[in-house]
Image (cartoon, rainbow, N blue to C red; front, side, top):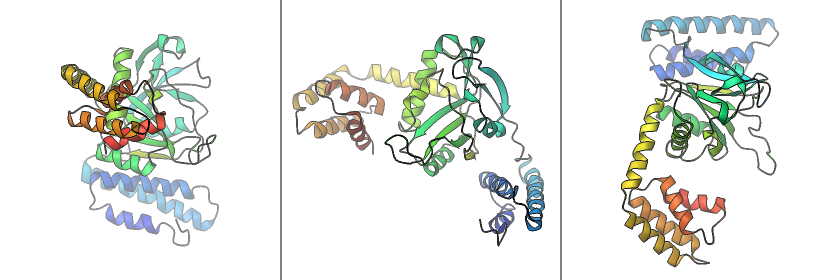
Length: 327
């Protein structure tokens, strides 16, 4: 933002706030807060004037929000349950925090998780339940802007926070968008570990097209903080975790009801034609065949891996074929 024309974009947004919808209004609030943070540490008489103006704008937005939407959208009262510790295994204490304060946790010195554990010991044996939030790690293949649009389209209440390795070299991997997505849930999760992990796996594969780190489904997974994290709030509604469970159970039922003959036919065809120089092509053809039979990406992946187990492709090459099948 150009400080020779302080708040020019913000002023334009202030005018727009009188007529925009709820979602756009929340984006304007976020832009105002970002502008306020940007100028808060600048020391000059001019900057002090900008800071006073910025606070006044936020107060105006608060009044407009109450008039137009019947609630102050600057005050998000939604709360989530998390656990935190400076250690990576011991001393995890559960705590209820406000959704809008999640960024403080991300930028703190504490590791965190959505799980609650007996005696604060973080592993599967000590897992009691999960708080009303899910965390997903994106380590490339999905930009922050793409994730933002995706979450808005799904109308999910979420937070995007960059991780330590965001836009940095990670070993031999080049800089790219690396970030975490926190998805709000409408209730804590008290299922069995198996049901929890299957539902999260379904969320990763079917909702997020396999982009998140697969290890995120682990009930005892924890995350490192990042003091330099950029945090972006996405307005929407908390996800009903029960729907994920129901969809996963329905998928399992459909899978069991699908003709075993179809599976055997595709398996035999793939195995009989799977040979050096033709491996990629035959896997793609078989994948399309299964897709036309309404098999899900995870089902197709399992069948193709079984069919090619005698001489498997490397994971990256196999993943490219699977993506091509479901384009």
